[in-house]
Length: 80
View 1 (tube, rainbow, N blue to C red):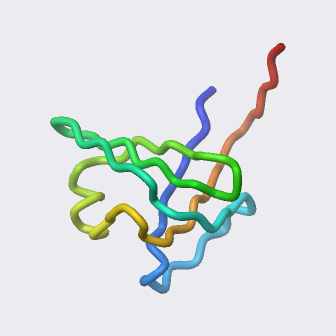
View 2: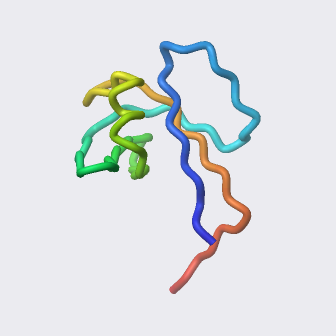
View 3: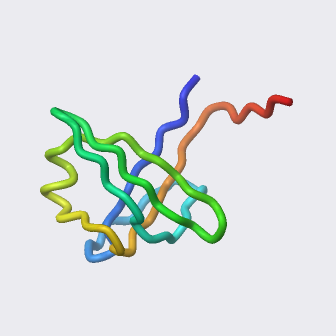
């Protein structure tokens, strides 16, 4: 089962119930035809979220923006 990653722009007043929230900085936005991949650096980790192009535009997301990454997952798996 895939994790759901939601990006929230810090300029807004939205509150989330998700417990796994991380403050980070947008380092890369790769735009496609309908979807975009947004890479967010949180400390030494990077999160990559696939969101719609419309969401990137409506949120006004840009590289170096401060954002909140909220992760909601029913399972977390580790492999070796």
